[in-house]
Length: 177
Image 1 (cartoon, rainbow, N blue to C red):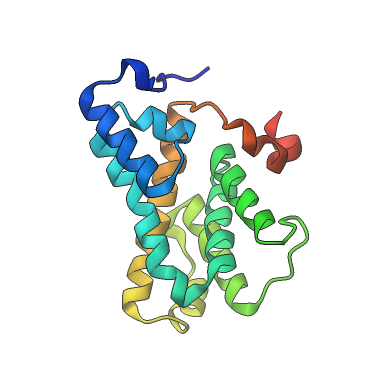
Image 2: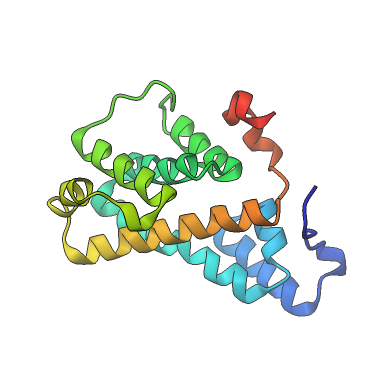
């Protein structure tokens, strides 16, 4: 059971409604996590910066590597909602997340994501080196900041026991039970 309720638009404050409307205009949907974050429009805005960092990385990494990186973080931190969202993105992109053939770049990003999801202080130098040789420092900053928001998102949904968005259930299989 969720530890924090989701904000109902009908009973929301004017500030919460404004934040809701802005999110709908920007991204077109409100997830259960966003409805929970809506208790604090500032928190909703801050967590929404995940999308800004993703957009910075898209032209450099591409769509699939970003989803694989975020899924690796979520999987290694055992966050069901994060895994569901990323697995859905991978499937929507045309791949089976359980039968992936990774490029060398994707392997490096997945290894980094797994390490970051477990413990950011224990990223092996070899893994960091594989990633650092591919990207400039601005990209590395964006990548690690993106990972930080992914970890924060997983932490939030897991700590407050955000209700699983029903459309994610098919992407989790046995994990959803």
